[in-house]
Length: 333
Image (cartoon, rainbow, N blue to C red):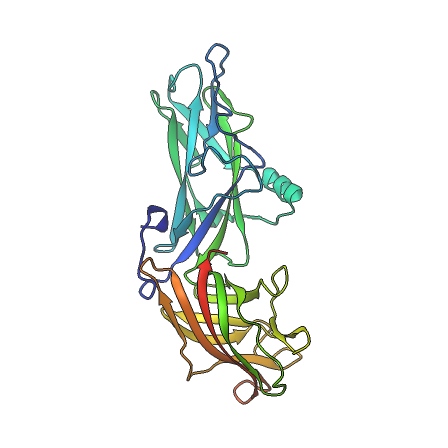
């Protein structure tokens, strides 16, 4: 069971980690119809990594086609199609393909596109290194299984899959390697419109900036960091406010929310709980409405949370800022 098949599980019963699959075709850009001969008069027999779950209209290296999946019993996965094209509509004999990893292709892609995809550790993946396109067919499907045992939420992983050899025909020049990249997202990940109230006890003139757009970014199976993407043109890991004359921010402070089912159970500081030079830490207001409301599809509708920025020793610090906010889900980030 996984979300690739459209299964929706109750969020407060089974925690899930979504995988986003991005097919990066900068190494082997396969345009619609490309790699398949338009005439059989001057045809060579080729094998290639087919589009699989990537549509034929996908033609650029910068665009991403995404699929949601979920770790169920600690694993998830996706399908890769391996195809035959040639003088015959179907393979004239069994064709065995040997597969491997092309780290050079991944390094080239990272260099050309200023990305930092990291190759999967071999222990995180399981798939057959040989597959067979049976005689009389034109394709076979390879299942890639991913384990979450070592999945680091701060890393975007990639599998640069390559057809190393074939027992018949030749490997297509523009379809022999594809790079599949993955990032993990938990149930609460997304872009939100935020409204609320804000009170700085030391400087009452300071006001919160509402409404604003905030991304909640997965940092673990049930934790999400706060990124303000509307105050400035790019995301910042700070909490911004209005001084009355200009926009400013609290140094060494940005909330990380911890969820348990439909509850917000903790708020901590991304810069350390009182261990930063400002001695700032975050703490949930237990009297607040700290809940998550899901829609019928299991997507968060709203997150209500009340919390403090405190200063001093954890557990005895003074309240500097009191914040009560409602996060309304706007879509995937």
